[in-house]
Length: 199
Image 1 (tube, one colour):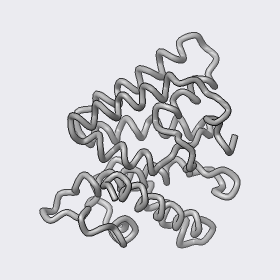
Image 2 (cartoon, helix red, strand yellow):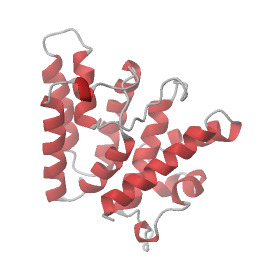
Image 3 (spheres, one colour):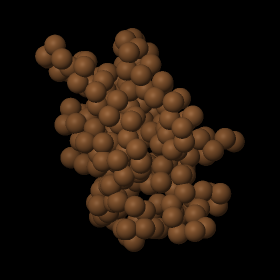
């Protein structure tokens, strides 16, 4: 199994667990703690160690005290999912969906809901700002703003795809591939297969 597939599987399992616990007090607490971790480094919010690191593949784990590419990608995707889900009943409207909805595709849906003539240009600028971010902190910052915009419009995202993209974006060649995919997803017009299942 490829590293990206492992990341997708791990994040998918964690989100299913969070969804299964969402109506319990403990589950609400887990989502609240994850939201507190948005934009932070993995070690800055100790309450998240068990939630994020439990059952994580050994090959993902840091040996030097600095989050690995895999740890950061999984952690960032899970904290952003918790932020995105806030204010929505998981049973009625999950902000994680299994369809092929990447950051590029979600920005397409966002631009389609806006009325003005500059909507496409604005959405593309957000995509360019995100893809030209220089480090993890900057990527996290721009993703947080983007997720908040998606949340306001009730537009979901596939967080397993996001986690895999965040892993790949941390090296130059991967960044080029992710950038190309996001651009393709943004400019691919919506068709019957690409409709969101929970609209």
